[in-house]
Amino acid sequence: MPDFLTSMDTPAYDETDPAFALHLGGKLETVSTVPLRDRDDLSLAYTPGVARVCTAIADHPELVDELTWRSNVVAVVTDGSAVLGLGNIGPAAALPVMEGKAVLFKEFGGVDAVPICLDASSVEDIVDTVVRLAPSFGGINLEDISAPRCFEVERLLRERLDIPVFHDDQHGTAVVVLAALRNAARVTGRSLGDLRAVVSGAGAAGVAVTTILGEAGIGDIAVTDRQGVLHHGRLDLTAVKQRLAELTKESEQSGSLAEALRGADVFIGVSGGNVPEEAVAAMAPGAIIFALANPDPEIHPEVAHRHARVVATGRSDLPNQINNVLAFPGIFRGALDVRATTITESMKLAAADAIAGVLEGELSEDHIVPSPFDERVAPSVARAVAEVAVRDGVARSPAGLRATHRGPRSAGGTST
Image 1 (cartoon, rainbow, N blue to C red):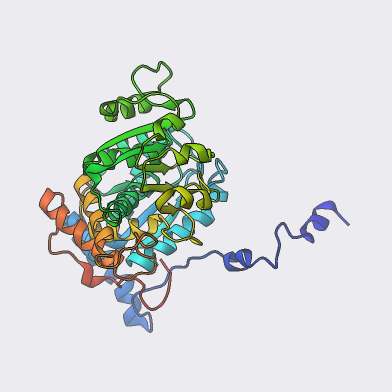
Image 2 (cartoon, rainbow, N blue to C red):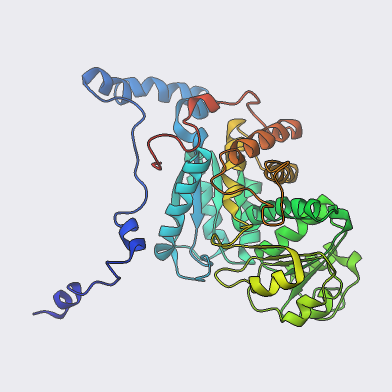
């Protein structure tokens, strides 16, 4: 028997694993929203009726958002270079994750999403490709693109497109961290301005978390990488890390992560690695620990609980999960509802406030963020984001078109 036939008889994966069973055939399909029962339906959905709609859009381009699905569809774009905890696995291997992201968009925000996995490695190729695809979409969600290229990809796309561009690894994480920290501060009888925080990790998430906490009025913040605290005295800083050092210069800290944690109120881990228990023990009384690396938090939860009042991780099997799904479906829902041209910093801050506000009157040390399945979250975030988009002058349709689309968690499931 030929070798290739023999190899085909041996499964490349464990057929008894339920994860593989769930993914057979993929997690998405397209479903028509209009009937196609007879010749009359066909003549309206396609030729000749569709020509009238095309002509109307050609004459009035703004009608594309009213007469097509564009106003409710987002492209989930990756090059597969920084996937979850898997690293640079390439665009094909990244597709299951992008399908999953599209499922979350639909289930939690009522937003249709299309996975776009690009066989491209340069910033220019990614940007040019997305710009050419953009006429089909109302928004662009960038996903799992490695740093520092992700910063330039987002910046250039924001400059060249008049639709929302959102790098979720940065901003989704930052929004949920801010929401969780606001509530953790409340639980411990403090405000953001009372807190001294240390962020471990100077990648995409570290940059965005540091930026949004600074905008929200954190008392003091330092960022560390493997060599210690970022500050202007270091000669090894990249351009991105130099900007972080500038953002955090008021902290006037230097030295190692362990030194920075002495007396700190907050640890936010977005880098992986392991923090020694003695460094954790040196934090201030009533400490707050967000150890967000998956699957292994930077500080083991048992260690964290010995020395902190509030502990959060990125894991779904532990209390206080910092999960981006609390942010991105509602952010895009609100932005699409008012046809926003961009997502402003104020819109991100509003999203964080909305997530935190869902638990008004329900807070505890083990309950500082809502569950991803709390049906109050996405609508609250969407309303807040839409209102701020109007206030910021980036909304093209303040009244919105939400009524034309199925709502979040709609009957019929997860199709795009």
